[in-house]
Each structure stands twice: as C-alpha cells, then as structure tokens.
Length: 287
Image (cartoon, rainbow, N blue to C red; front, side, top):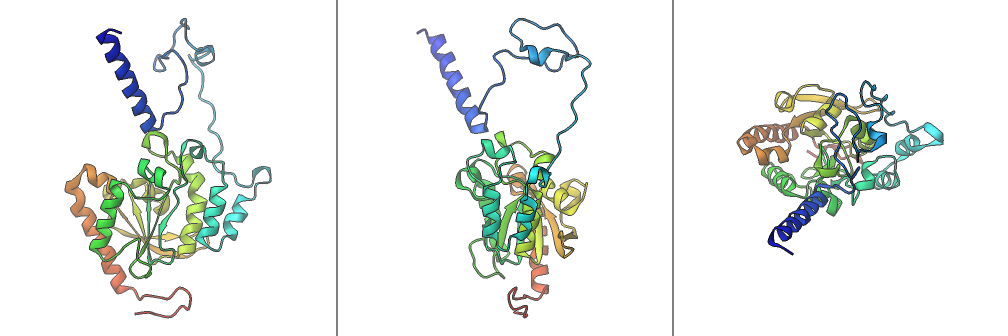
C-alpha cells in the first residue's frame, strides 16, 4: 500500500470514528444528492425515489405531534396516575413513540432529590449524559454543580432545603447533540409536566432558550428572558415561581457571561431565603 493510500485509509477511519461520536449510525445513499438545486435531470447513481419530482413538489404535511389517545393508547392516563417519580420513570422507560429512543443509549430523565425546593430543567442530554443515564454529568454538569454549590445547593444533598432536582426537556440524546425539534419537546412535555407536579418545587429554573420557551411560554431569546421572575402553571392550575438563566454549555463557550448567570443564581438564593420552608408531607413550616 502506498503512503497516499495509507493516509487516505487513516482519514476515512478518523471520519468514521467522528461520525460515531456525533451519533451518525447510517447513510442514506451511496451518491451525494444536490438538494439545493431547484430542478435538474436525474443523474446516474442518484436514488430515483429521491429525485423523482423534486422540482415543484410541495412539502408533505407535518406528522401529528403527540397524540397519546390514538389507537387505544392510554399513555396520558398512565402519566396522570403516577404518584412518584419512580413510577413516572417506569412509564417513560416503556414509552417507544419518541424516535430519539432508537438512537440513544440510555433514558436520561432525572437526578437529585424529588422533594427539593428547586427544580432545574435543561435542554437535552449530551454524550456523557447518554452514557451514564443522568442529566448534567459532563463538563456543563460539573459547572452547574459548582454554580449550585456557590449558593448552598447540591443535587446530592437529601435535605430538601439544600437540594435540587434536575431534568431536561428531552430525555434521549439527539444524534450529534443537535438542537431538539419542537415535535420532540412536545412529545416529552407531558412527562416533564407530571414530573414538575410530583416534585412540586418552590422555584423552577429553566436553563437555556429551549427550556425557557417551552415551560414559560416566552418567545424571547434567553438573553432577554434570563433573570426575570415569572410563573409556571401546572396542568392542574398550580403556579410556581420560575426564572430562566443561561445554560452551562453556553457559559463554557462564552465564559464572560458567567457573571450574568451568577446574578440569576443570587436571585434564586435570595428567593429561597425569603420563602418559608414547608414540609411537603405535613404542610408545616420548617423556618
């Protein structure tokens, strides 16, 4: 084998390894297709099904989102019947309607204390989270843990006054860590909503634009919505104090903005100090 062929072979292996790390698991054809060309005649090697009628063809209507009652599916009723996070995880583990489950390694639903006063919701699991089955365990998770520790909170503390409960808008890793689609977040939303009701936090923290827009109903970008108190209303009508902040993954790319997230977390600490601690079982004040 010549040096040029050896170099080409090594480059191909490196490319395949990179594809694997990014979540690419299959190819769609042996030949490249110019999908930006407005119209052209099929060439040898093109897939006929792809090229036939490309010019002037209208896009198909989008598929319905999450219809849990179709075909006798009682998923909605089973979600509603959950009384613990463990029960909710059990139903979610058997839920096969989300396409992301087919390409993910593990379900990544939650971590922390289910009785915590603070619940944090991020966007979607990444590679480390997918491998371990827990949210925020990679580099961004380590940064989040340091941020929480700076205001006296931890996912590992069993005391509800000092702990947090962590989840995401999406519970399976999107291939290549791409941004979740609206259809995917809506598909997971009923599980997240029930999780919020079961935890019943005093404060709900949305990290990043996806979580803020899905939970808080805002259309603003995260830089405009962060640091502002609002309310989240559960499906059964209870209101929870809510605040949006910057996602730790963004802060790793833009470390100068850590000061903004620190301001948000100081507001969370201040709100916790002002709000009476209530025993969720007895209903009595702990302060």
